[in-house]
Amino acid sequence: MRKIYSAVLAFSFLAFSCKKEKVEIETLSKAGEEFYYGEKVPVWAGTTGNLRDLKYSWTTTGGTFDGSRTQDLYENLWVAPAKTGEYTVTATAKDDKASSSRSTTMKVTRYFFDDFQSSFTFDGNGWAQSNADVKEEPDNDIDKAHVELLANGTSGPNIRRTLNLAPLKIPFSVKAKFGWKTFFRASQSMTMSVYFVQPATNPTIPYMRELRLQFQPTVNPATTDNFTVGFETFVPNSSTSSKFSAVGAVLPAPPPLFTVVRGRKPELAIANGAERTISMSIDAANVVHVYIDGVLWFQSNGYKDWVTYCKATYPGFPDPLAKEFRIAFPAKANTNEAGSVLTVNSVYINDDGTILK
Image 1: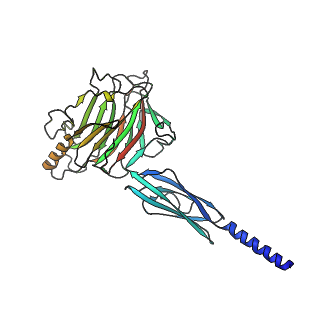
Image 2: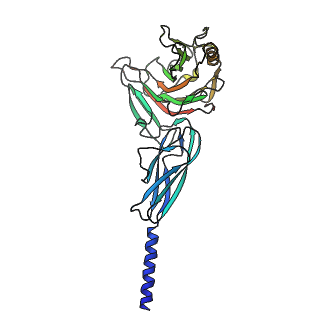
Image 3: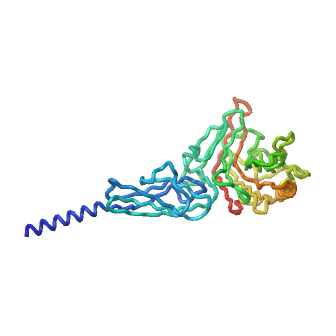
């Protein structure tokens, strides 16, 4: 009886030991729920069991893994593809006895978005700024999270992002929520712009260099013009290279985007601490749309007429390719003046034909 009991104990201990040695990925986590083109997303596995001599392998149905990270670790860096959709990332943990796999769904929703919820906005993820001190205000609430930029000198400050996640062609739509707080230099402007690539070929023909909405948030629109809107064309190596939308423009100079180039718009007045949501879009038919706080301000064939003329006039005229999104605000009038403070709550960019509002 004693020998049988000992044998049972030995078997039980062995079984218990084997159970303890079982490898299992219990969780596969990711940094976020929705992602944009080219976003680098940390993913990591939570594994139980025998962790000695454990190696990992990773697969995905779309996108890639960053080459600077090893496939053998419990964490990896997934790089989203340049196409909306749902993709599967799978991690497999294995040793010389057992293996375990777990998958998670990665949802790519648009060309780009940022709600400024991270405290690492300017740490190598595409955003840049000039002539401003940055204060990041992360928050789990996307309505509260934002970034603040304080003008720190007499040169023009801005926040900008290079649009190189994938080629950003027409149609596209850009929406930003921004405003100011504490101080804004009197009668000065904010500018929301999309800049375009200068084509490498045909350096003597015009191209669209900028789509621009410039407005003065603190002037009284009842008495004073408070906006300028249009697009700028540019001809390299020309003494009259730059032209902005003008009423009565003779093609190929850029025509106005609607009946006026500058005027008064009460909705573009912004109080201290308030923000406006503004979107600028060019649809597949080359029609420009501008919305303020979700309400359509205007649609325009101005750009459509210009590009139609150029395609008919200049053989091989290239389609515009966006290269940068930018919000600019006023510099100090002098070194002793207080600096204007720009607040940016969110930026969204679509390239699927959807008009953001």
